[in-house]
Length: 287
Image: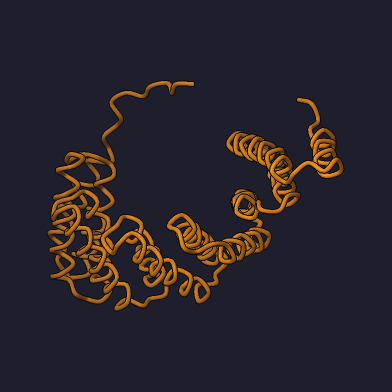
């Protein structure tokens, strides 16, 4: 592949030095950063992280070279930050996520796309804070994201529910069980209103709330929710799917906590059967 940078610089010099309007320079930069960004994504998928980093930096440089490319600059920053996150370079990723968020917050905030981008950046930075053990810093970011998604998409939207789940998981990890319980109840009520009481989307939230109830010693409530979640999963996936075994194990653990050992043993025996089932057939993936 030919080396691209000198040609790009040459085009930019012509555009600026010869008095061409900014639109031409912007067009050159846009073509360049788009191609480099896509190539960087492909290199990243192939595990060529060094090449991906170089391409992402080239894309970022193209965006920075022309005024009016700030939002695309944020996209490049996020791609590079995601690469650093994957490589466990958390400090470098944090700096880039912060820069992207600052850019988005300085831009136009009146349209839905801009607000959605801000919420996305808040979630990305909060998620990174969690990896760094900065849970106290993550909490307000999740709350801001929830406020934005609630306002834009409505409280019953998928986006609002996803943002709330992130905060609920944080509360569980922080052992703030009443706060987690309140959020999961809200998520379940939203999902029931939007998709109905037996929607497969409900099962993970029912399982999560049941787990919280188990920790709080509310075993009867936990038992009811687990039975409901398992029934939904069985209807959706069938009685012998490996994914169902996870919920059965959770239910058994709650029953153990409630001193209902005989019932727990029956579930644990069922889990063993499911785990012993081998896949029917493995097929070669298409290339």
